[in-house]
Image (cartoon, rainbow, N blue to C red):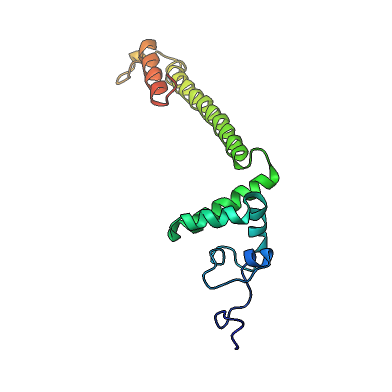
Length: 162
């Protein structure tokens, strides 16, 4: 294969950033490792939201090992801002937080229902059956109401309700 204009042998095309900006992509191009030519939409959205100059500055200020994560974050935020220009990913985060709060409330209700069912279960065990359970040999006396109340109170504390 021939070398094309000072680029490495085997290099196929400029990175997506250089292609969009219509400039020559060099070996030391800061964009090429993060915006490959086969994913032009990534740089297009980042460029539209942040601007190529700002992205270039941000990438050069970061150590190389952090640049990949920074680019991923910029692409995510740029796509979020395309959908929601005002809030961007903050709108998504807020929505997820509201979902978490709602689900935590549902979980608390379900846990309270479980505690309530546990409180009802021992007393119903001792009611039916014809004779008096307390007089049967080896029978265990039912727990007192105060004992069940304190047990429920401690379970409520354990689940963070009190």
